[in-house]
Amino acid sequence: MATAPVSGSSRILSDPSSKLLNMMTMLAATRRSPLPWLSDGPRAIPQAFPYQGSKRALAGLILSLFPEEGVRELIEPFAGSAAVCVAARKYGMADDCFISDVNAPLIGLWRQILFSPEALSSRYEQMWLAQQTDARVYYARIRDEFNRTQAPEMLLYLLCRCVKAAIRYNQKTGDFNQGADNRRLGARPDVVRGRIAEVSRLLQGSIVRVADYETVLAQASPNALIYMDPPYQGTTDVADHRYLSGLTPAKFAVSLADAVARDLSFIVSYDGVVDGRSYCRALPESLGLRHINVVTGASAQATLLGRDEQTVESLYLSPALVDRIGGDWRVNEVLEHVEHPELPLF
Image (cartoon, rainbow, N blue to C red; front, side, top):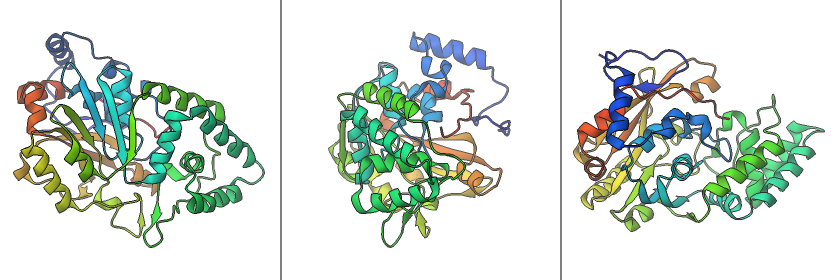
């Protein structure tokens, strides 16, 4: 029977009687190489901007589920902060990265990070300095201007200043409408410049484009590994969407069924449960995916609402990926008491 995690930590739900030392010894022997993405911890993975729902804290576990030799192509069709691509490039686990999203302004920001990192950082610095007189009024003005122009540097500023890095879009107009966290002014320009420079360096040569997940899946090859972190239903079927575009569960399941039939290797972060309340329905068992429950610590959204609640997220592995990494026994070995310290957004 699974035990509840201690506060401030996250772990795989598994048999608590197993020994972490034994697990790490077997894991290292099987892979014949160290696992720095686990020993370094999530803070070692750079992040260009804060983003609620970022999987940086789970990136070590996710990389452990890659083929031992890494992958030639890693695809993230729900880009967000592209935490898995960044981690994979940092640790040499992916040659080529393909980052996409239906959120055009977000992809515009990624293009600036990859191709004009210094200019982007300088524009952020100008805005950060300009807000000093009246940060509350300045934020509202930049938000209005962003909704008119979709300028990437303005999105960066909003992400650094908005409440809990939780993007919200008006359901009717599509406008960014999240308020500012008026307790802070956002990360200092020198800090942002360093973060952007490091991520830009790691992701050089990556392909970035505006595309929906269906198009990306249809074009993917069996040699690629696809990591999908789609928006949860509980964040898209409300008046203020926390994602630009929602996700239809039935439609998504159909796309996954096609991917399974084509022997595509993929990992999906999907449903989540907070203190017994599910964000959305689990993926259909008929897909034949390997389902893993992961306790990820305090819910960021619950914290935003002043509640202390724990979140359990799910990872799903495609049959092709399970076979590719050595079968269920290999997955079980990876999961045996791999711990993931809870990580603040930024």
